[in-house]
Image (cartoon, rainbow, N blue to C red; front, side, top):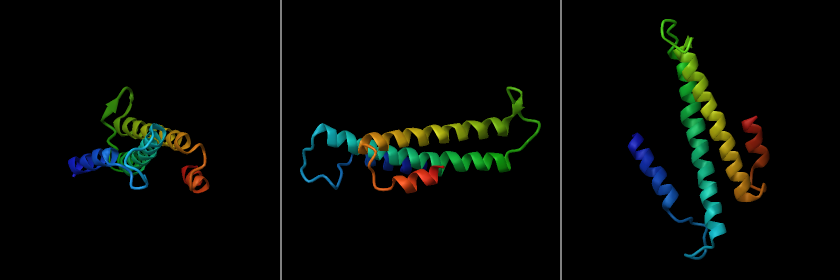
Length: 115
């Protein structure tokens, strides 16, 4: 399943956009499409992979005997995964703002979901 998801991501990045009218677009249009797709992939990974894994580690991996660097292992993994979630989300926000110039379709909804 993970291999199929990785293939989907690779195909998603390398297929041309359906919204393009001509087969040859300028470099700004191509870079904007790439940034929008990067935004989508980063949000998918952060909110459908890293955040649920952080929650699952906090819920099911609480073993007081396992320690890493003085802290319990589940907490270290939980904190790391939440940090990766925040980092991916911030990078995705930067990608969409730079691709659209700050004028994308749902800024109020997107920002309210993040906050």
